[in-house]
Length: 200
Image 1 (cartoon, rainbow, N blue to C red):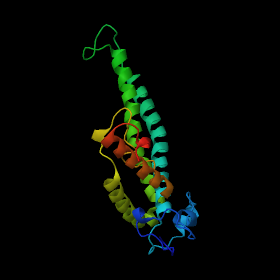
Image 2 (image 1 turned 180 degrees about the vertical axis):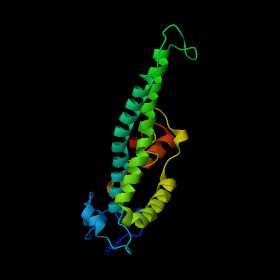
Image 3 (image 1 turned 90 degrees about the vertical axis):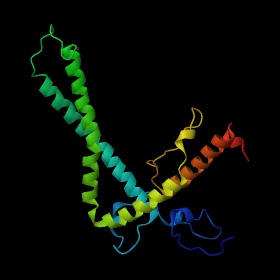
Image 4 (image 1 turned 180 degrees about the horizontal axis):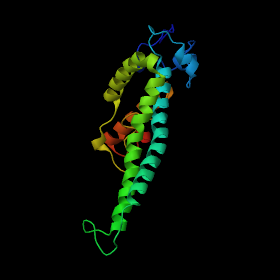
């Protein structure tokens, strides 16, 4: 039983809630402000909650950037294919030209949606360029934790889906602990079948 409270050095060693100690989840907010993150000295190691908060911000930036990028691709495709002369009596590649050009326009929008995260991630990195090395160091360490603890997706079933294989939904230490719990439940259910909640 722990009698002293010491700062955790790795994500896996974070204490749950030792009696009489202030846990890391209490000393750090789940959603630290940007000011708190910017005030971290370059020589310090980025706290886990701060890193996970920034990681979630990057994911949101990628999603947000996908919207205008998809619209731009959609309108770009529409403006191009709308100018083409269409002869309804002539097939294009064996397909009705209206259907073909309509599908190509939608495909342009889909391509824009896929390209959007690249612009969002780039913009996010520019904003947080001063902490790039700290974020990169934590990113590598976090990836090792995820790679070590994530489940085997080949054992999934309809009643036992994979719990966030790439850990994209983790935005705090509490989320990480919940993810570990879900992974353990998945493995128990995959190994023994039935409901993981019924296993002791």
